[in-house]
Image (cartoon, rainbow, N blue to C red; front, side, top):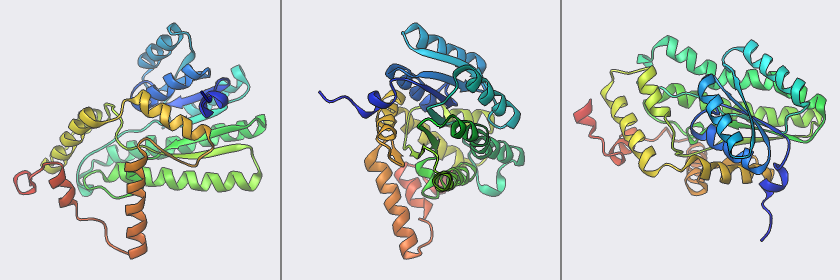
Length: 294
């Protein structure tokens, strides 16, 4: 049986995964450790990060927890300095930390908007600003994978803050790819475009930033239901995506068919100069009666 690209490439070295205490971040951390990497389990929740790292170590892997708020540039810089002081290099940086929010755009709380952008967009920028110069200086082949979403390819109703942030992450990733090519750094760049992977992101959004809009609440309830019933297991998704990263691909998918369909929809919309899709079709497919919840 042929050895996987991931096992060849990621059987050693250091990986840093932000938002690694739960969901797809945890899946990535566990899978990378199983391949042989030393994983920095970075998360704002220090207790959960320590639990994940301890469990990886108990299973024979190498992992270290690190408490970091990616929305705080000083916190991110301290993490980068600590990791490079301890290990000398980072072979894989996964900028995964992110949060969701529901509601009609004009009803979004300003503080929630700013906090989401600080985590989802600024957090990626701060990690790039702190890690990229050190990765270039180390001079070893490495990779940066930024977590966008199928929502970074298309527009989705009642999720404006998240969708805007994921479009921004995708644009930032494409620009990073080009900027690193100019300086000739041996750093691969990949844009991660996951579909539905089981996590608590919708529950967290409803808990931390509840909305009074009935349509938004119905959409998030349906998305949480579908996430539980149909979402990919984080470890299964991680294995699939890490294999693509190891092969050197730019576009990284959790579900090839669903993610390709989203890309084609976006491409066709731009080619046709068409407006965004009528969201009422999406609501109907979710089993939501627009008139009843409006």
